[in-house]
View (spheres, rainbow, N blue to C red):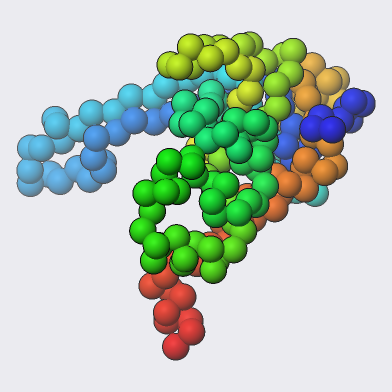
Length: 214
């Protein structure tokens, strides 16, 4: 079961909510105004405001405990590339769990990988494909959409690279939470989300790993 049948009147990690606004700042260069130069006119920026369905990514135990800040990320459409991989296409939520190296890429791509690289991946064993993504199962609340391949789907996903914090004064108000909360993950699904986002943030870059091992 992907979603909990009965939802709480409090916000939980992984909840799908509505009614809050997210912003995206687009900027072409840092705002470093130098009084000796007249290049500040080249600065271009804009702020886009949207109110999508979104997912709570603040841990349950931290929501509203010390302040009114909450981490959110929008639900976005799937990538067309997912439909090229039969293993993932059979069940898109497989992206959320670890898999064998040969399952993480389309069969044609696996055949093109060099023997050396293939052996390296096999020795690394099971891992996540698309480490920054987590897919949400279809639900009647999610509008269906057409991909470039003309395939219709109601699956959505979140991208850990698109997390942002907002201040939400209604974070502890049950009457408000009951109006904005749409879906709650099952305990098992929430554990899968927690495991994957932990893996995403705990990766050690190769250059750091060399120094740590040394």
